[in-house]
Image (cartoon, rainbow, N blue to C red; front, side, top):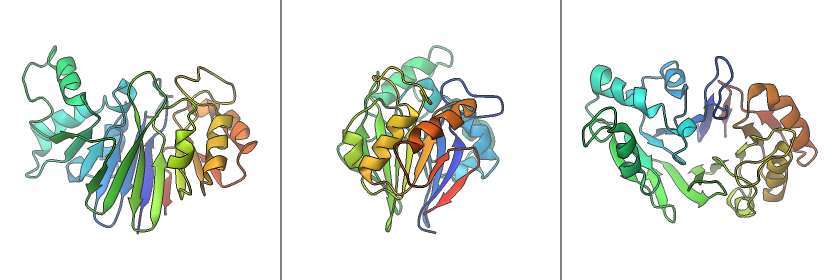
Length: 250
């Protein structure tokens, strides 16, 4: 196994019934990493592994549907698992202080997350090495600072767009990716280009980047068929919706 991507959640901020928001489980020979931890993702994670065995969590940005399940994850680590080696929590710049200011209103204490995670902020201009997994970043077009993730192990590459409107910079970032996990929140229709992509725009990005496979994410399951139709008009490679529990081996 070089690089394995399992979909834990792929819904937008309002998940469909029995579905979860953003979360991808990334496995290599030597590391197991969770990319984003949105609503419902922690429960899905427990269904496939002991969460304390994660090597790390990497969060793309601080909209709630991408990190809020760090809350139950934190309580699990503190009161049930108590692992001798805590998972690492890699957050975007400035996030440690912002998250602390949110949680201290209801659970006072200076080290809410740091008590159970090895917490740090990544440098978006550099690279993050988690065992044999290399992670690099690209700023996207979104109302708050957000970073797409490029995940590389040996000769396999997956790119996760996180949340973004149309931006040419993702064409170069996703160039030749074995798997491009791209948001398509606006489905078959258009929407605010400062926030998200449509299915057609996701397909266009994949085509321009020469991505080998496209996986549409961050859209409600009932909208998936329309988004796939729109993406197919722009992209003629392998194309799927990021249905829960789908696994991709690269």
